[in-house]
Image (tube, rainbow, N blue to C red):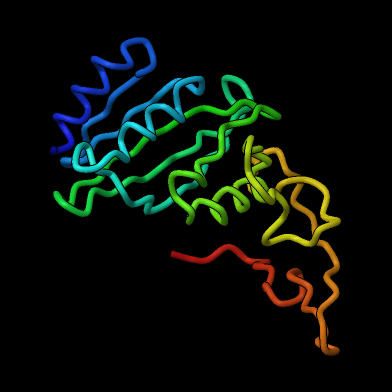
Length: 177
């Protein structure tokens, strides 16, 4: 089943759950409601059709306007037709999304990264903890309202940290063009 057929079936089966659809350069992006996310992803994974058996990526984009939220993007791939489909869902701050580890085991680290960097919680995740930042880190660095400061970092094995303001030269003069 190709992407356009899968999208048509989704629109019929989940009438009120599809918020938006964008077709750009031959690739389809669907914006869906959070409440139906797991059902929609389960439907899309079914083989032989629709057959989006590969979760290529799971990432997020943080927004401050019109209200603070993170747009979570699931990038799916159908290995039979070689077609891709993006599913987007909006997670407001401190709002949880369902975990998809039971659909794609590889989502484990993706979800942990989204939790660590953006603060998105995933219900049903077996081990939702930081993956990139230290365990005692405060905040989520990829949120747009995260304060940009220089933090002292303790490295292992006696490695001395480099302070960003000391290694990035400050340009005092404007370049002449």
